[in-house]
Image 1: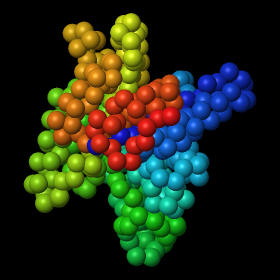
Image 2: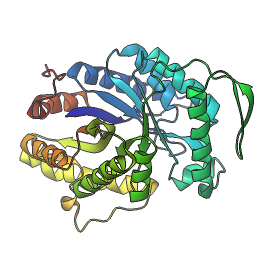
Image 3: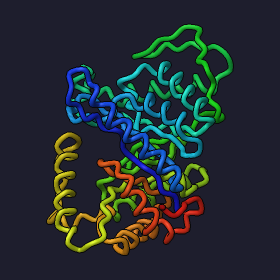
Amino acid sequence: MRFGLFGGAKAKGGTALGAGDSHGYRDFIEYVIEAERLGFHSMFMVEHHFTGIGQVSASMTVLAYLAARTSRIRLGTAVVVLPWHNPVLVAEQAATLDLLSGGRFDFGVGKGYRKSEFAGFCIPPEEAGERFDEAMEVIRKAWTGEGRFSHQGKRWRYEDIVVEPAPVQRPHPPLWMAAGSPDSVRRAAREGYNLLLDQIISVDQVARNIGLFREECARVGRVYDPMTVAVARALQLFHREEERAAAIETRRRVVGVIGGIAKGPRQFSSIEEDDAPLLGLPEEVVARVERLRAGGAAQILLVDPNASIDGLRAFARAVMPAFSTPDAVAAE
């Protein structure tokens, strides 16, 4: 199995000029550098706007800095929300990042789902699908076409342009799509995307979505590779039973926040029945990862809003060896 990271830096705020924000970003950079040292395979960076809680808004800018501070870990977006961006500028920025990272970039894209973000950009959510489709048409053409091209679409028009630089990875960086509904999972498989599954869905839902993805790959003649699916999971590893109640309360709070700003509240008969997080003592977390592996998951992306280096080291020491990750090294 492979293990990676999912999330992003968090601005701490505290000054009118934003100087305090840099501490959160610097801490996160060190977190990713340590993850590379420990043998983690990838880091997928979120993009969000207008939340008021300091989430990353300029993901490719942060990843470009990380490209200079790392040498092996893959760097991905999760996701660039295409309806809000000029697709030619995105193609240029993404190709530049692929160049600077030496071909370590993974291009995750999505349509967006937070109503507050669409409202802030003054874009009707019902336009998300057509804007996404046209943007991807332009980006694919920019990366795979020969020489200059023109595009006359509903939302975007370009005349006799060439996108530079070309990406290092050919024909382009791996494309990842965040998907959850059966139709979107099938579309990802059908249109050549890798699949990103979110941190909230249950283990059974993960297995069902991977099954749908595999079936659609087979139907369209695409060779299925388990590493083309990545599953985000919250990490709440502890070492003493007395810490369980606090971990459950933290999970309750996180689910409430995610539900409040994203897709609406998640419903469980009790929070203790929520099997999505990697929550528990080391042996319990190993068992939860094993359930994911049994359901077809081969790539797990850890979500830790605190970006705890100690937590990473504990996971690398207590969990990763159980899954024979060849690049992992024991935490010091």
